Length: 145
Image (cartoon, rainbow, N blue to C red; front, side, top):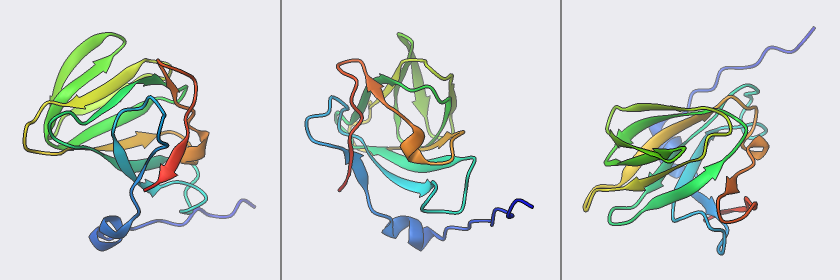
């Protein structure tokens, strides 16, 4: 018998206290940071990986990249430009974006004052399954900040 996966409930305080992560210096990734919320082995989840990503005002961005897993964004705050396979889309609070697996995509903050924040979700058991391939090179190093 397969063990039952347990529910996970994260309080606002536990999310606020989660460590910020980012790509290693020298990675052509932009200046995005994120907090991982659900990801094996850190949480008892095995089918979804999610977190909250943040881009600072005045130039925060995640450079164009690909990965094999499809992804979903839900814009929590701010406004920006989402590029998917060379086509630009304006996004703002409450927008939802579906990114097919393998599609090249990136996002940039267009706001002068407000941080751009979004919830991202992958159909993957853990964040380590996601291999980022940036247009500039094939690396995906990440680091705790």
